[in-house]
View 1 (spheres, rainbow, N blue to C red):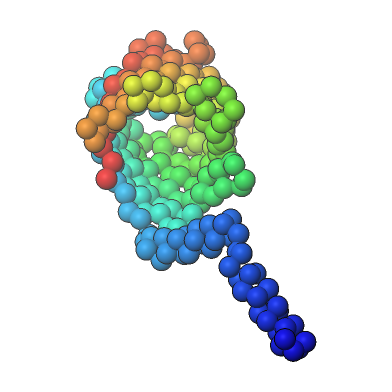
View 2: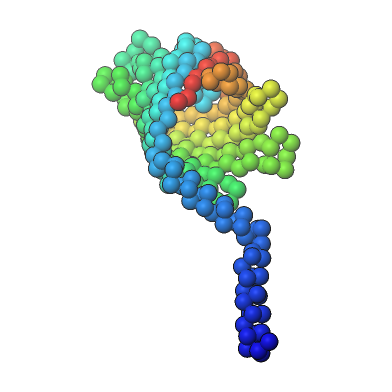
Length: 265
């Protein structure tokens, strides 16, 4: 065979060999990339979700907001694939019954951003609490805003692979125009047998004090709960308690077992 022809045949054979010897890993990576691009094309940029529920009592940071009465609650969110979101949530309540600053409704509006750094997720944003009935006749404005941020991480190397979350909420003028308010918390949740999710939370609220409570106040609170999805509904049972005895006017206001059932759409 001619030397140049022989060389060309060998080069052609080597080229074919390199083409057809693409590793399985490279093919898998290419397939995964194509699937990801296809999913990205089909997933909507905006997602709208909603939730509605009823609770035997509305407890917020360990303290009853409904005077031990049931509460109807619900809200909706609009989230973007970038991580940005806005939403609102509302609940019936009963505070300061019989007084001019009594409230029967709480409306929360919020906006924020969720993201991930490595294996850790984060959430930052702004939340505004609105009590429509309190602003006209009361001596103080009970509506207030908070800047919030939290980090969460799944501990895969531990039994039950618990998810740990820590966070902080800061208000420059807390409920009732009471000055700076800082709330820090931590929670641990994990999947348990029979499809149950358990949760343990502890938090610390510190309020500087100003118009409504000049001396200020602070307290710890704790909760232990469990939830389970049942036929499209989520049932939750939780125990709440305030650990600072001199904060509450009565133990009934700061200790409760709450049952709730909710649905998400």
